Image (cartoon, rainbow, N blue to C red; front, top):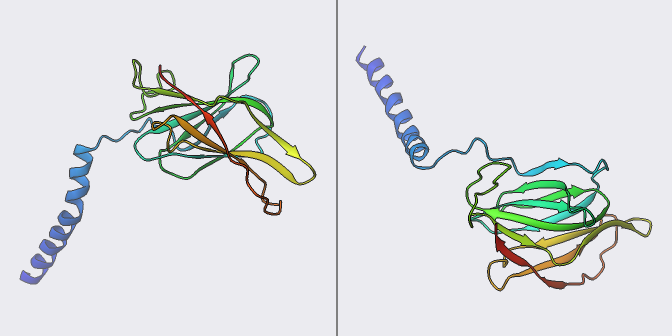
Length: 181
């Protein structure tokens, strides 16, 4: 019986050893069950999403990508981006105004990351067009927000479909407007 008790005690000690850091972390780091998963939240255009949009971000803030109709101003697509993770979403054809809401703690679809300066708004100065060019090229975009708080610059590169032979990339820099909501 002594060996069986010793074996049980060892198993309990090992479980405690591995479980203690998890329990400690669960007490100190709040778990956010309501935070959306990374990816498309909704598409209200009624069109199929087939054009690539990639966004580069840094760790520390999460983002909500919003595409809106430039004529009406109505938001037509939303996606959630976890800061620092690879992000790619397919969007429908068309020309859209692009903006991002950025913040640290997700507080829901209505307030996003909070009110009174807790949510930063980043807006691309030019409209982005997603369309087919030629026979086999889908025109997409790459937006780099990694320097959006320093110098307030966003880098936008054209993204080409995978079926297209490599072509030199044209870099354009555009100013972004950063304002608290």
